[in-house]
Length: 156
Image 1: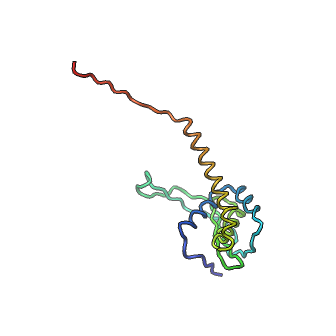
Image 2: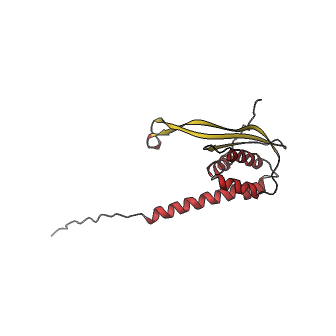
Image 3: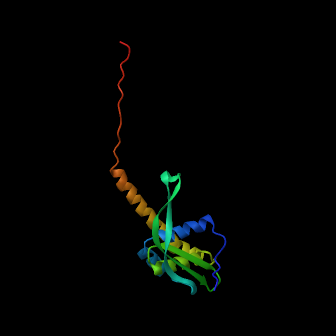
């Protein structure tokens, strides 16, 4: 069976896929469980665990190099209405990948999107922003400002 995935990946879709992938599994499951209307979906690619090669760049803009490998889990689902969703998450969590794929498919449905966007994606994004803000506050508390006072002798 050939899995046909949506050809168009908009910047907006990249954002919600990123939010779903980076959220802690417990938060994803809690947000999923909070949905009152979860559609029936068919698994196109059951969650499978694999490895990907992670590449890096020296200084962010230099030559590319192979940093190492990491474990990822991926899944693909199709809603009864025909929308197809994919989920890729780091680690070995099959449930997280399947929920991410289902939410991706629901976000592509005009009538399901408003509920899912608020109850799942926005909720997970808020949690991620709160964690970033907390980390930034902790880092700011340890900030030290150094200054140098230059003394010059003027004409006598």
